[in-house]
Length: 251
Length: 387
Image (cartoon, rainbow over all chains, first blue to last red; front, side, top):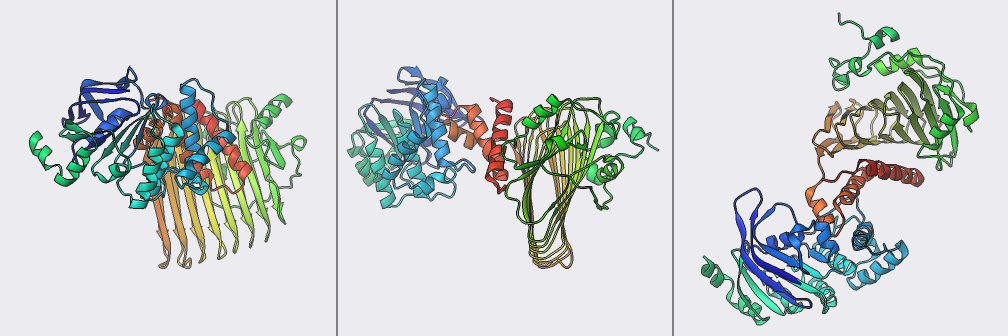
């Protein structure tokens, strides 16, 4: 589903290189965890995949379902099934969550040449999914992420994912700022979306999240490239030893 | 001596200019670009009036209308009778001076009891030779009464519209006033609204400014009785080379009153918006709570917004503040919307609508609010830009 080859990325307005030859292959149905110390390029990878401005790809390629992902606009990527769950979801005053979800879903359907969903159908569709994430109607009326607690923001991200039904989900530090109960709700939501035709990239600093969302593959990112890959046990090893080994290796 | 302009010679009076502090951004000596002869009698074709009547965003909301065509009351199109005007505003303001010299007619409305449906005052100008159309209105909400009043300005062709409205809100009374300036693209709109507020009254005023090539609107609000609350808010939706200048003076003369001002200004192309807001708290006006803010959203690099907030506080136990911001759309907000599949143009429209929506939300009447949202969506679809 996703082929990242020798990806080099620098910040657009300074010379700092952040990704430095990253290669990764993700197949449908797989869950890949990307772990690494702060500053290793984890969040940059998520932004480059979703098309945020401010980054410049200097070398390499990203192919998604056989197409050049980097050539697409952010909204086209989303319509084709790429979804980023933000580490820090953005607050948008004045746009009600329900309205936002409806415009997003119908924009995607329109881009794919599908029929737009009617309001009553849509309300049912969202409420079903919201209930599973303990999101009540009151929260759906509030402006997107405005005044939401850390846990509410993360649950709202997963709700968007459940509503938009993407093929490739990138979860950026979804565990940050969550207590153990909130983490469980979020992880259950994510696990409920695991399917043979959906792939996930779970970006995290800590192993804790991977107790709940069990990955098929674990990669260690250091200084902008993957320095070690393995099965889920690699995460446990990292938890015990820390990242020191990789930082010195790469340096 | 500065030589008189063609318009000044025609009017027989002087126009305000940039060397006057309140008019520094809006030099009428230059902006009133030709003589607009006053007191012209212009007959209007029935079909022109019908078309303009239909173009009011409130055609389905208003219960009763008082219609003025080219500066004269039209009994044929009005559902309410109009009384004679007796306005005694004596402010030394150029717009009022011009109005006093040229006004031909105006609405006179006295409300007692509670008016259930909104009343719309409609001021229409039909396409004819350039001229000045001036009206003087008096709105009186009697003790304990309540009303929602819409004031709509619409027109076609080239004209200068001068509208002065005197508003008296009595003790315990409430007025919700929604003014919508949708004059012709070739028109000049000058106005002054002067409100005096009695004890324990509520004045909720909103102005949408989206028409005319040149717009100058003055508002003065005087608190005359304690326990009174005034909200004066508005939105600009401007494009092309439109110029709109709003100047408000909120005058707290008595203790225990609250004032709020919120203006949200959207400017595209080469449009220029100005907000001058002054809050005066006089010596006796203790416990005044006054806040003012203006926010501009600039959709192009050539649009401009100037804000001049002023606080003049002579009392020592008050809460007052002001804030002004100006900028383009927030890129993080845009990216977040686009990352969910919303194309750039729709994402921008959604954010702009949310921005002005905050001002629309201050309107209590749902039908009027909906009509304005509809208008704003139409405006956005005409001004939608793709970066």
